[in-house]
Length: 155
Image: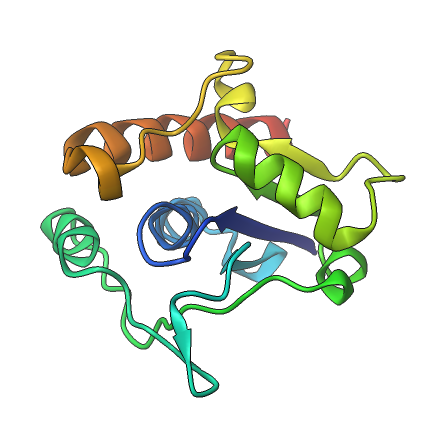
């Protein structure tokens, strides 16, 4: 089983979009039993009183527009234990990448990656809709990255 954790700053836009897009892609490929997929944040600002905020409404709407229901998802912060639990820890941008390595105490096994690297867009970041309000661009980036990731993992 391949265990993947998608990570962004707050776990309310990009990383949950990637989580649910990837789950949808593996389901359509008939591979759900071969993958375990989650998402998390590098910050704790979307987690209040031990309970994370739900997916940001426009991100949720974008997923629903494409027939993907992110029901029940709440933000959570990634922890050092995630490094051992997951095979791949995939950030959406360089800030996530560097914060993940700090949280995990480094990356001795080379598990921390950027999503768009899989799409041949080395060094590019997934558009952050929190600042741009462009959920279409984020959808396009996430779909391209997840599709390429699945293709690479399935050979």
